[in-house]
Each structure stands twice: as C-alpha cells, then as structure tokens.
Image (cartoon, rainbow, N blue to C red; front, side, top):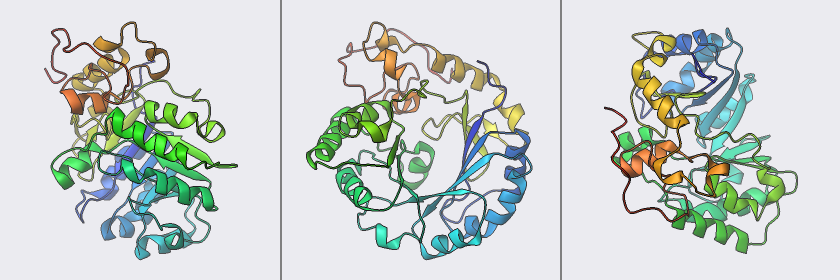
Length: 309
C-alpha cells in the first residue's frame, strides 16, 4: 500500500522549553487527516499549548493520546477533561505508582541500552498496580541525540537479559496489556505473559515512512522517531508536500524491501526485518539487520548504497 499521507503521527511538542510555531504545526498535522496522533509533552510550553493544539487536531477527528512526564504540572492536566488518552512516562525509576494521578490507566517505559535492566522493577510495580497498560516503545533517536549526543540502542543481549529477569519474578498480568514496540523483546516476553502481549497479529513490520511519521519540536518531519533522517519542515510546507518528497519515497522503498541479512532467516516471517531505525543507527544502513535480532549474521553486508545517497 502506498501512503500519500501517514495514518499515525508522533509529535514531540516541546524539548527543554524549545518548540516551533505550535499552532501552525498542529494545523499542518490536522490538514493531513491522520487517524492517530501521539503528543509527547515534556515542559511548560507544551502544557500551556495543549488546549490550542487539541482544538486544531479536533478539526480532523483523530484519536489522540498524550504522553506526559510524572510532574505536578502534568498530573494536574489530567483533571481538565480533555477527550484524549493519557499515557504517563515513568522514566527508569521504580516507585512511580504513588505519583500517578487518580484514575491513571497507562504508563510508558523505554528499555534502551541504559535503562533495560530496570525493566523487571517496572513490570513488577505495574503487575501490583491498578494500571491497565504498560507501553514499551523503542528509543526516540531524534530526542536522544539532542539530549545526550548519542542514541542508546539496546542490543539483543541486553533485551534478552531484561526479559529473562522479568520471567524469573514469576509474575502474572491478568486483565492487563503490554504494548511492546520491539518485535524481539515482544517475542521474549510472550513466553512469560502470553495473554498480556497478545498474538501480534497486527504486526506488519517497520512502518517508518509509510504508515508512520514523526514531527520534532521544531516542526521537522521524519519517517519515525527512531529513524533520524530529516525529510523537511512542516512549518515551511504542508505535511503532504514534505511527505511526498523523493527522499521519503526512497526510505519507504527500502523499508518495504527485505534486509540483506534476512534472506532465508526463520525470524523474518515474524519480524519482517525488525526496526529499520535501530538498524540504521547501529550500522548506517537502512537495509542492515535489526541489532536486536538474535540470529547469527554474515560478517559484512554486500555492497549497498547509503540511504541518503
């Protein structure tokens, strides 16, 4: 399927009190008529702009989820009655339940190279709480580079160790749901929580640059937050104009293809090449294997062109 516009858009509204022309960006997103919009808000600028952002987005009628940090200003926003789903970013520190607002249903934790070992504590506290959903997204590469200067990509050994530590706790998650973005982490957790992780029927491979788009706090458009290839600015042009650029088309074509190391791999039927963003960050190539894949690979790829050539 060829997506003339993305159906799901993630937007980092602000970053360290920096943001672009927020209402213009919201208007550009609404003009693209996505079905789903994920707003990620981290500071005062985003908190103050949320009402105006939602007013613009509601013109297109997408399902909106708002990711917020566990800060007093943020927890107060949950009482305003906005028609959105709140997902609380708990960071890498256990003991988050007492800080959640009343009625909180969903939390998010990023198991990256630096935080994956905290996963057992996060899952244990989630299991004992009244929360319904735990989201485990991939690392946001664009934000990580801006904040730390590098991207803490988790390898399969780190993810496998975290999943084994979770399994050793002997927990169960009746009536709860795990939303795991990484195929290989999902597969590792499936053995421990088959009911909570689901059967992954909805997994259709990497959606970067096809069904999914990411907008940073300055209005720059990317194929995905895990794939830091800038396509252009939606402050300067419409989202559809930027989305239909030749660069996005090349990214989409590569994402649809089978990575060079996946030919004949037994995992490929399930993972469909895994996360191309993580592959790009680890190797510099979009068509390299996902670093979280446990399968052994040839020592080097065949001669291939850079994704940005």
